Length: 299
Image (cartoon, rainbow, N blue to C red; front, side, top):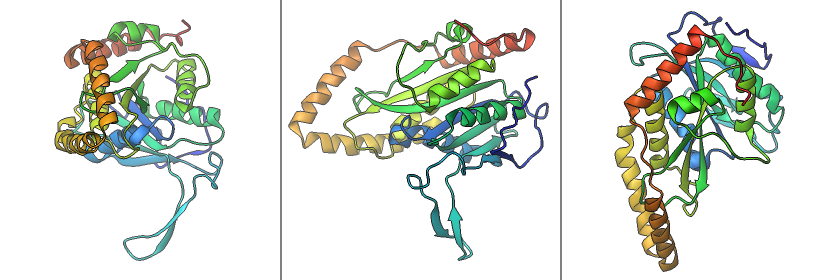
Protein backbone atom coordinates (compact mmCIF):
# COMPACT_ATOMS: atom_id res chain seq x y z
CA UNK A 1 0.00 0.00 0.00
CA UNK A 2 1.38 3.37 -0.99
CA UNK A 3 2.01 5.88 1.77
CA UNK A 4 0.67 9.43 1.64
CA UNK A 5 3.47 11.90 0.94
CA UNK A 6 1.92 14.57 3.14
CA UNK A 7 1.69 17.64 0.90
CA UNK A 8 0.53 20.33 3.33
CA UNK A 9 -1.25 22.31 0.60
CA UNK A 10 -3.63 19.38 0.01
CA UNK A 11 -6.56 19.87 2.40
CA UNK A 12 -8.83 16.89 3.05
CA UNK A 13 -12.44 17.13 4.19
CA UNK A 14 -12.65 13.38 4.86
CA UNK A 15 -10.37 10.89 6.56
CA UNK A 16 -8.07 8.45 4.73
CA UNK A 17 -10.27 6.57 2.26
CA UNK A 18 -7.97 3.63 1.53
CA UNK A 19 -9.93 0.41 1.83
CA UNK A 20 -13.30 2.19 1.78
CA UNK A 21 -13.61 2.63 -1.98
CA UNK A 22 -14.29 0.20 -4.82
CA UNK A 23 -11.08 0.05 -6.89
CA UNK A 24 -11.06 3.77 -7.76
CA UNK A 25 -9.56 5.39 -10.82
CA UNK A 26 -8.48 9.05 -10.79
CA UNK A 27 -9.32 11.35 -13.73
CA UNK A 28 -7.61 14.76 -13.90
CA UNK A 29 -7.67 17.81 -16.17
CA UNK A 30 -6.39 21.34 -15.74
CA UNK A 31 -7.32 24.56 -17.50
CA UNK A 32 -4.30 25.94 -19.31
CA UNK A 33 -1.96 25.10 -22.17
CA UNK A 34 -3.14 21.47 -22.37
CA UNK A 35 -6.84 22.33 -22.43
CA UNK A 36 -7.70 23.89 -25.79
CA UNK A 37 -11.33 25.03 -25.89
CA UNK A 38 -11.57 23.88 -22.24
CA UNK A 39 -12.54 20.46 -23.63
CA UNK A 40 -10.70 18.42 -20.98
CA UNK A 41 -11.87 20.30 -17.89
CA UNK A 42 -15.38 20.22 -19.37
CA UNK A 43 -15.12 16.41 -19.53
CA UNK A 44 -14.24 16.20 -15.82
CA UNK A 45 -17.04 18.65 -14.96
CA UNK A 46 -19.46 16.56 -17.03
CA UNK A 47 -18.63 13.42 -15.03
CA UNK A 48 -18.80 15.29 -11.73
CA UNK A 49 -22.34 16.44 -12.55
CA UNK A 50 -23.43 13.11 -14.04
CA UNK A 51 -22.38 11.13 -10.98
CA UNK A 52 -23.24 13.83 -8.44
CA UNK A 53 -19.67 13.82 -7.16
CA UNK A 54 -18.95 15.33 -3.76
CA UNK A 55 -15.93 17.45 -2.84
CA UNK A 56 -13.58 15.53 -0.54
CA UNK A 57 -10.59 17.87 -0.67
CA UNK A 58 -8.87 20.74 -2.42
CA UNK A 59 -5.44 22.28 -3.01
CA UNK A 60 -4.61 25.51 -1.20
CA UNK A 61 -3.86 27.97 -4.04
CA UNK A 62 -1.62 30.30 -2.02
CA UNK A 63 1.76 28.85 -3.01
CA UNK A 64 0.95 27.76 -6.57
CA UNK A 65 -0.36 30.88 -8.30
CA UNK A 66 0.73 34.32 -9.34
CA UNK A 67 -2.48 36.16 -8.49
CA UNK A 68 -1.63 38.97 -10.91
CA UNK A 69 -2.14 36.36 -13.67
CA UNK A 70 -4.95 34.30 -12.14
CA UNK A 71 -6.88 36.75 -10.02
CA UNK A 72 -9.41 35.84 -7.35
CA UNK A 73 -13.00 36.76 -8.20
CA UNK A 74 -15.51 38.68 -6.09
CA UNK A 75 -19.15 37.64 -6.53
CA UNK A 76 -22.43 37.61 -4.63
CA UNK A 77 -23.74 34.25 -3.44
CA UNK A 78 -27.39 33.10 -3.53
CA UNK A 79 -28.01 34.85 -0.20
CA UNK A 80 -26.70 38.16 -1.54
CA UNK A 81 -23.47 37.94 0.45
CA UNK A 82 -20.31 39.20 -1.22
CA UNK A 83 -17.73 36.37 -1.44
CA UNK A 84 -14.13 36.10 -2.60
CA UNK A 85 -13.36 33.03 -4.73
CA UNK A 86 -9.75 31.92 -5.14
CA UNK A 87 -8.44 29.73 -7.99
CA UNK A 88 -9.61 26.24 -7.12
CA UNK A 89 -8.28 22.71 -7.66
CA UNK A 90 -10.86 20.41 -6.13
CA UNK A 91 -10.79 16.67 -5.44
CA UNK A 92 -14.20 15.07 -5.95
CA UNK A 93 -15.54 11.56 -5.40
CA UNK A 94 -18.23 9.73 -7.35
CA UNK A 95 -19.23 6.86 -5.10
CA UNK A 96 -22.30 4.64 -5.21
CA UNK A 97 -24.57 2.64 -7.47
CA UNK A 98 -24.22 5.00 -10.44
CA UNK A 99 -20.62 3.97 -11.11
CA UNK A 100 -19.23 0.40 -11.47
CA UNK A 101 -16.06 1.47 -9.68
CA UNK A 102 -15.37 4.57 -7.66
CA UNK A 103 -14.20 7.59 -9.58
CA UNK A 104 -11.99 10.32 -8.13
CA UNK A 105 -12.02 13.55 -10.11
CA UNK A 106 -9.46 16.34 -9.87
CA UNK A 107 -9.97 19.47 -11.90
CA UNK A 108 -8.89 23.08 -11.74
CA UNK A 109 -6.32 25.49 -13.09
CA UNK A 110 -2.75 24.76 -14.12
CA UNK A 111 -0.50 26.32 -11.47
CA UNK A 112 2.19 28.89 -12.23
CA UNK A 113 4.62 27.83 -9.50
CA UNK A 114 6.04 24.79 -7.67
CA UNK A 115 5.04 22.15 -10.20
CA UNK A 116 6.93 19.38 -8.42
CA UNK A 117 5.04 19.98 -5.18
CA UNK A 118 1.79 20.21 -7.11
CA UNK A 119 2.58 16.86 -8.76
CA UNK A 120 3.21 15.36 -5.33
CA UNK A 121 -0.31 16.41 -4.36
CA UNK A 122 -1.70 14.16 -7.12
CA UNK A 123 0.43 11.28 -5.86
CA UNK A 124 -1.05 11.87 -2.41
CA UNK A 125 -4.58 11.85 -3.85
CA UNK A 126 -3.86 8.37 -5.22
CA UNK A 127 -2.46 7.22 -1.87
CA UNK A 128 -5.27 8.77 0.20
CA UNK A 129 -8.01 7.15 -1.89
CA UNK A 130 -6.26 3.86 -2.65
CA UNK A 131 -6.70 4.46 -6.38
CA UNK A 132 -5.36 1.89 -8.82
CA UNK A 133 -4.60 4.18 -11.73
CA UNK A 134 -4.75 7.72 -13.11
CA UNK A 135 -6.08 9.03 -16.42
CA UNK A 136 -5.02 12.53 -17.46
CA UNK A 137 -7.15 14.32 -20.06
CA UNK A 138 -6.10 17.15 -22.32
CA UNK A 139 -6.85 18.93 -25.58
CA UNK A 140 -4.44 20.46 -28.08
CA UNK A 141 -4.97 22.52 -31.21
CA UNK A 142 -4.08 20.42 -34.24
CA UNK A 143 -4.71 19.66 -37.92
CA UNK A 144 -8.16 18.22 -37.24
CA UNK A 145 -11.05 19.06 -39.60
CA UNK A 146 -14.24 19.93 -37.75
CA UNK A 147 -16.24 17.69 -40.12
CA UNK A 148 -14.58 14.45 -38.98
CA UNK A 149 -14.55 12.62 -35.63
CA UNK A 150 -11.96 14.35 -33.45
CA UNK A 151 -9.11 11.93 -32.82
CA UNK A 152 -8.12 11.10 -29.26
CA UNK A 153 -4.59 9.82 -28.76
CA UNK A 154 -4.20 7.45 -25.82
CA UNK A 155 -0.68 6.88 -24.55
CA UNK A 156 1.25 5.66 -21.53
CA UNK A 157 4.87 5.79 -20.41
CA UNK A 158 4.29 2.43 -18.69
CA UNK A 159 5.60 -0.13 -21.19
CA UNK A 160 3.47 -3.03 -19.95
CA UNK A 161 0.31 -0.96 -19.87
CA UNK A 162 0.96 0.49 -23.34
CA UNK A 163 1.54 -2.94 -24.84
CA UNK A 164 -1.47 -4.47 -23.09
CA UNK A 165 -3.91 -1.84 -24.35
CA UNK A 166 -2.20 -1.09 -27.66
CA UNK A 167 -1.47 2.50 -26.60
CA UNK A 168 1.07 4.89 -28.05
CA UNK A 169 4.26 5.53 -26.13
CA UNK A 170 5.32 9.20 -25.86
CA UNK A 171 8.18 10.04 -28.21
CA UNK A 172 8.33 13.81 -27.69
CA UNK A 173 11.53 15.37 -26.39
CA UNK A 174 11.78 19.02 -25.37
CA UNK A 175 10.14 21.54 -23.07
CA UNK A 176 7.11 20.02 -21.36
CA UNK A 177 4.07 21.20 -19.46
CA UNK A 178 2.35 20.29 -16.22
CA UNK A 179 1.00 17.00 -17.60
CA UNK A 180 4.53 15.82 -18.36
CA UNK A 181 5.58 16.65 -14.79
CA UNK A 182 2.56 14.81 -13.37
CA UNK A 183 3.32 11.71 -15.42
CA UNK A 184 6.94 11.69 -14.27
CA UNK A 185 5.87 11.91 -10.61
CA UNK A 186 3.31 9.12 -11.05
CA UNK A 187 5.86 6.93 -12.84
CA UNK A 188 8.33 7.37 -9.99
CA UNK A 189 5.63 6.35 -7.52
CA UNK A 190 4.80 3.22 -9.55
CA UNK A 191 1.27 4.41 -10.36
CA UNK A 192 -0.11 3.34 -13.78
CA UNK A 193 -1.13 6.41 -15.78
CA UNK A 194 -2.79 6.89 -19.16
CA UNK A 195 -2.88 10.14 -21.12
CA UNK A 196 -5.91 10.95 -23.30
CA UNK A 197 -5.60 14.01 -25.52
CA UNK A 198 -7.98 15.16 -28.20
CA UNK A 199 -6.97 17.19 -31.24
CA UNK A 200 -9.23 20.20 -31.84
CA UNK A 201 -9.34 22.25 -35.07
CA UNK A 202 -6.76 25.00 -34.77
CA UNK A 203 -8.74 27.34 -37.05
CA UNK A 204 -11.75 27.45 -34.70
CA UNK A 205 -11.71 30.17 -32.02
CA UNK A 206 -10.92 28.99 -28.51
CA UNK A 207 -14.56 28.57 -27.50
CA UNK A 208 -16.34 25.65 -25.77
CA UNK A 209 -16.14 22.57 -28.00
CA UNK A 210 -18.68 19.87 -27.01
CA UNK A 211 -17.53 17.67 -29.87
CA UNK A 212 -14.03 17.48 -28.37
CA UNK A 213 -15.40 16.89 -24.88
CA UNK A 214 -17.61 14.10 -26.24
CA UNK A 215 -14.58 12.47 -27.90
CA UNK A 216 -12.62 12.50 -24.64
CA UNK A 217 -15.53 11.06 -22.65
CA UNK A 218 -16.06 8.33 -25.23
CA UNK A 219 -12.43 7.24 -25.10
CA UNK A 220 -12.36 7.45 -21.28
CA UNK A 221 -15.37 5.12 -21.22
CA UNK A 222 -13.71 2.74 -23.67
CA UNK A 223 -10.56 2.48 -21.58
CA UNK A 224 -12.04 2.33 -18.06
CA UNK A 225 -15.45 0.76 -18.64
CA UNK A 226 -17.12 3.62 -16.73
CA UNK A 227 -20.20 4.80 -18.64
CA UNK A 228 -19.89 8.55 -19.09
CA UNK A 229 -23.12 9.29 -20.95
CA UNK A 230 -21.14 10.88 -23.78
CA UNK A 231 -24.01 10.27 -26.22
CA UNK A 232 -25.97 13.01 -24.45
CA UNK A 233 -23.54 15.43 -26.09
CA UNK A 234 -24.54 14.33 -29.61
CA UNK A 235 -26.83 17.30 -30.21
CA UNK A 236 -24.55 19.98 -28.67
CA UNK A 237 -21.69 18.56 -30.74
CA UNK A 238 -23.80 18.62 -33.90
CA UNK A 239 -24.89 22.20 -33.18
CA UNK A 240 -21.26 23.25 -32.68
CA UNK A 241 -20.37 21.67 -36.02
CA UNK A 242 -23.24 23.45 -37.79
CA UNK A 243 -22.05 26.81 -36.46
CA UNK A 244 -18.47 26.16 -37.57
CA UNK A 245 -19.66 24.94 -40.98
CA UNK A 246 -21.63 28.13 -41.52
CA UNK A 247 -18.58 30.24 -40.68
CA UNK A 248 -16.26 28.20 -42.91
CA UNK A 249 -18.58 28.43 -45.92
CA UNK A 250 -18.25 32.19 -45.82
CA UNK A 251 -14.48 32.01 -46.39
CA UNK A 252 -13.38 30.33 -49.64
CA UNK A 253 -9.76 30.03 -48.54
CA UNK A 254 -10.60 28.36 -45.23
CA UNK A 255 -13.15 26.08 -46.92
CA UNK A 256 -10.47 24.80 -49.33
CA UNK A 257 -8.06 24.34 -46.43
CA UNK A 258 -10.64 22.26 -44.55
CA UNK A 259 -11.18 20.05 -47.62
CA UNK A 260 -7.47 19.26 -47.66
CA UNK A 261 -7.53 18.46 -43.95
CA UNK A 262 -10.43 16.09 -44.63
CA UNK A 263 -8.40 14.25 -47.28
CA UNK A 264 -5.47 13.89 -44.89
CA UNK A 265 -7.72 12.71 -42.05
CA UNK A 266 -9.43 10.11 -44.24
CA UNK A 267 -6.10 8.75 -45.46
CA UNK A 268 -4.76 8.37 -41.91
CA UNK A 269 -7.94 6.81 -40.45
CA UNK A 270 -7.05 4.14 -37.89
CA UNK A 271 -8.85 1.01 -36.74
CA UNK A 272 -9.09 1.12 -32.97
CA UNK A 273 -9.78 -1.74 -30.54
CA UNK A 274 -13.38 -1.98 -29.38
CA UNK A 275 -14.39 -0.40 -26.09
CA UNK A 276 -15.11 -3.80 -24.55
CA UNK A 277 -11.65 -5.06 -25.53
CA UNK A 278 -9.89 -2.02 -24.11
CA UNK A 279 -11.79 -2.09 -20.82
CA UNK A 280 -11.19 -5.83 -20.43
CA UNK A 281 -7.46 -5.43 -21.01
CA UNK A 282 -7.32 -2.52 -18.57
CA UNK A 283 -9.03 -4.62 -15.89
CA UNK A 284 -6.67 -7.52 -16.55
CA UNK A 285 -3.64 -5.24 -16.24
CA UNK A 286 -4.85 -3.85 -12.90
CA UNK A 287 -5.52 -7.35 -11.55
CA UNK A 288 -1.98 -8.33 -12.45
CA UNK A 289 -0.70 -5.22 -10.67
CA UNK A 290 -2.61 -6.27 -7.54
CA UNK A 291 -1.23 -9.79 -7.65
CA UNK A 292 2.34 -8.75 -8.30
CA UNK A 293 3.06 -5.07 -7.55
CA UNK A 294 5.58 -3.77 -10.03
CA UNK A 295 8.29 -1.18 -9.85
CA UNK A 296 8.04 2.11 -11.74
CA UNK A 297 8.58 1.50 -15.45
CA UNK A 298 12.16 2.36 -16.32
CA UNK A 299 12.04 1.64 -20.05
